Image 1 (cartoon, rainbow, N blue to C red):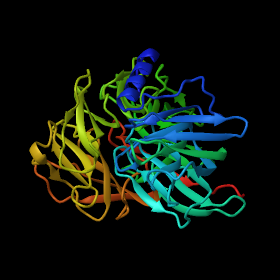
Image 2: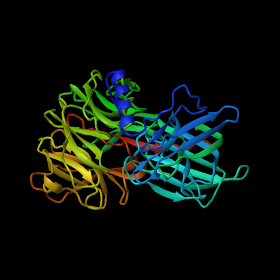
Image 3: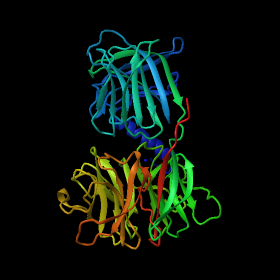
Image 4: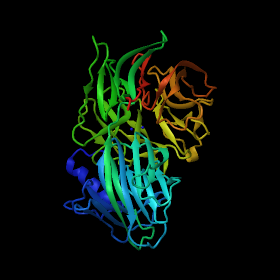
Length: 518
């Protein structure tokens, strides 16, 4: 799971409306110079308007902010930022002005996914009483967590990003800074990076001065080599058909068997099959909208329509779209976000997807022609990877509702009140994700992580692909045939990748690349 208006003006209007609704209408005039930063705003509920000023002579930023807190499930503060992708180091010397009304006023160096009050974020927070901590909200709307530094009352603080890994450091200028963390959270590029101040009393303003501010982009070498691989069930053999340094994800087999649909770098590509020599990627142009595709995509059974999930200039969180198979005519189906497509109904009338609503991931469906989303599950904390059975009678999915990650199923029209119709399909030590049915309806492929793996966002050794006979109307204990164990994870096989003849499937193996010597 890794947005969308068809016209530029619609995207701008939608984005502006989102900003106003989130309570940060106090954006600074675009003409105000902010040095290395681009703009500033009050985030969340801030009864007293804050401000951000850059002194070009001294190079100092004077940030004045209100707001009740940067904490819990929503934030309220003044934020000055720039948008940027990739890894970075951000360092500043910080001092508060005055004694302050509340000891826990905060000055922060922060990275946020977006400008909503409940955005995922990480920061190094210097409190008015000297407490220093690495604060982070792992997903939108989740509760903020904290890792406290051993340093109290530092002058200099730093926030670093390396992929999904965030660390802090604190100390005095000229001395070695003491590290803190790390924590791991997944943020989609580009992100908002900058300086913030919260008064901790919504009715007053507090000011902090940030000097010697440095925001340095750090080149990010490829961490993995991607190997697009085809597994032949009869021969029980694998063939690597394409490889690249960097991340390529989630192959789908075209309905005519002529290419794989893959994503890399936020774009969708066709990877031709059966060609002489090394195949060349063919980019699918999705038109205006600034779509940044993730690893949830597939073609309808007749091959005429393409469904994909992406962020866009209109939304920084994933939404679900359909388009013609050549990428033209992109149409937004899920205004609510984040939403991640996973499967077509066999008659191509419905799309099933996972969406985070009220802090939990549940399953939904939406008509291919458009319309309101229909909720299918309600009981679990995290349901994902939904896919229709080939007969259209069931939706299979993975969930942690039983304690482990296992495969469950519900009728195609939903699990009923409190998911009373949900049935558990697998129950073993593996952490089971992403059930995928062969087109002939005879086999179900399951992707499993090692026991105890909390999610599916990492790449690691010991992941397993297993196949079993497709479950019938009455469930029996799952009996798996283990096909192979390898280094894989997020992006390996998120969406269905069976060949049309049900004899092969495609997946991605990852090979860690050692970073260059420093």
